[in-house]
Amino acid sequence: MDYGLITFSSTHGAICAQKALEPVTRVRVMPVLREISLGCGMALRFPPGDLEAVRQALAASGLQPGEYAFYAITGSGPALRAEPL
Image (cartoon, rainbow, N blue to C red; front, side, top):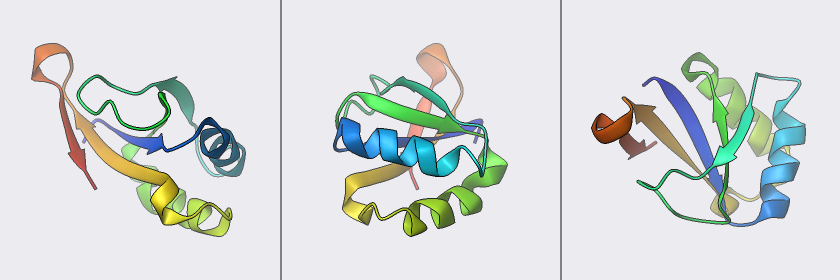
């Protein structure tokens, strides 16, 4: 996994998650990848080593598990792979 990605069912969920994750890890807001194309169109990118901390922070944030989904992203360009976690 080159990086982790979280997609959201709503823009509100993405913003709440960003606020909850900023003290825990370095996150970057980006558009949802074409290979996934689910949700509200916003995604959060995070370093792969922070997956467990990110899961814990989102669980404590008040967001419901159905409001977001995790993906492992590997490669780039035509070789990009997005696998659900």
